[in-house]
Length: 175
Image: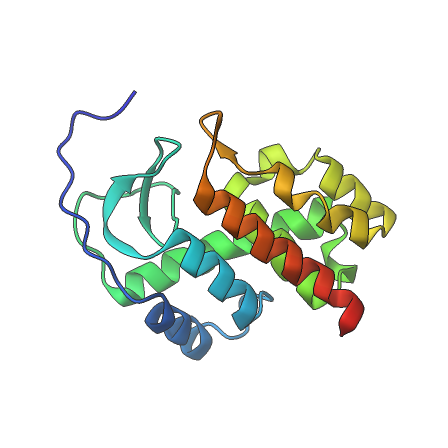
């Protein structure tokens, strides 16, 4: 059920600026590469004030749905810090349940992106993670298009994101 609290008008922020802050201020805290961050950031977009995403979840910054979202405008530094914490959460899931420490960088980035979007609870028992644990990266990469719905509806934004993630994931073979 949607909150009855009136939310402020959306004010966008620059994904590139947030990536710059993350690269400058948090370079040793996450493994996800700039390419992975760009896929996540541009798919999620950057919004300074809280809003409800298509899945009806309160969100702020670059897809941050974590706790303590206050109904106010967030600074670039606050958005970057929240995003780093959210990326770290997704990376821990990939490392723990999908053999993440051993994944090629492009596979790791793509899988971190989908895990960031879908959440660890849904991903950890997925066929994609099973393939990753078996070392069958191609089969895992081909699972991306299956994850294109929110609220039971296929969303064009998710279709596009999954294609980018799949392409990045499959690029391990050409690197």
